[in-house]
Length: 247
Image: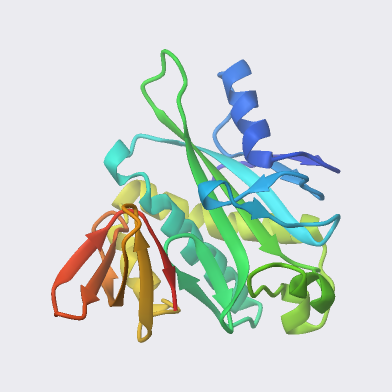
């Protein structure tokens, strides 16, 4: 098992940005280097959305993954990471489900978001992925209600406080198992489990595609690289690489 290099900060603007800068400046940065912050002031989600967190309330960290996986298959690592987080939470007694492409949900509320970015390094034949995870841990009800979308936390669900340091080490072990499975066997090894834990498997979806078209459809399956396959109202199937969904 790969040893983690964990570097904690009391506060950072963005763990993803810090790790990306570290990689550019120091190209021998180890695989599974982990940058974690107890407070993240400029956390980002998909499409530059803001990730809200306050000191000690969320586990925010980024992991450097070195991979030989082909570029067209890289996006599925986000879904593999989601499966790992959901399983970790279920092991804790939290009924977590997955929302395509990068959210972990509990009772229809977001508890975790995942942001993956490709980091290019000159004169390097490998691909580097920065896998950023934000997990709501000790956020209380008043803090969750201040977020513009339904949110929850481990503390709200289980009624207890958690050590971020301990949670990080536990979650990294689960995450590593799934990422290694993804590295060695591709997304096919993980896809079935993602689909079994899909939060919107039986719900009508309102989808906004990259062209801005809004339409309703139902979830059908995932593609080979984690694409969203939906069934339109006329019965036709459509494969989406990028889209926003509501249900």
